Picture 1: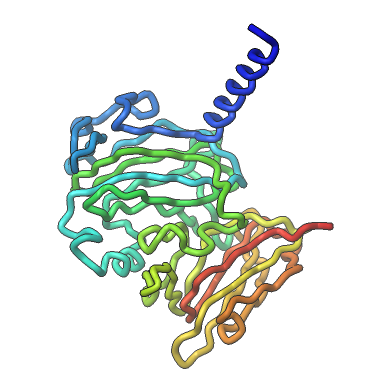
Picture 2 (picture 1 turned 120 degrees about the vertical axis):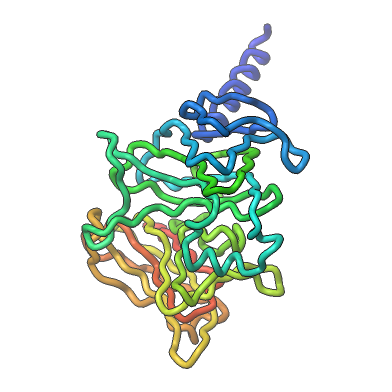
Length: 320
């Protein structure tokens, strides 16, 4: 073999190794019946065919089927993509109020892929709010009767060592074609799901209050009606860095809408907040740069209110 061929072979090997290393989990059930990444299968979990597709079937009588723990790091940003379908009388194909129902109950009444984090001692761990209130990471609600990609972008909590994924059908038959977990690299922001790009059924950590919800406008763009008290998921910040916030949205109702960012220490104690924009200032999109987190800040959370929000994109400023 010539030196050129040797170098080409090494380059190909490195490229394949690098690509594989990027995915912490990558299972396609219509190509393989490999169960090495699952805990022992419970009765009612089988391979079969649904919607003319090969898939893993989780019967309605199954309480939950867990995967083996996956090593994670904080503050790494992750993307979980689940391609699945469900047998249910209420799906996005049969009920046009599904997005509204999901916003009211967090998707917890539907079939779900749940996310639980554990520390190095095997104890469950979460983000904390006010130093004591556990903030669980929301899972992926499966609400489509046809196979669709469900996407969730998230950060692991500060003390997380492993992640456990669990398929929980909640008395519905669940069909799973694929599961993929990888570092998120395409959003280009510090915060998660900054522009609702994954659609109205994938809130991605955003939590509108009871009067709010995600919905699709006539121009096919997904936006979020925030209600009076909505919030994003936590995202990491460095109190020695500065950040830019690009916000776009339109107010509604008699009370002015706004977006603020609240800062927290590692234990979830609130340190204070910075007002970003009133609704009248961000209809066409507005950016505020050079915002430095309060000293001691490790995490931040966006809190929009009374706005039809199109996007909030948080980026770290160039230190130069």
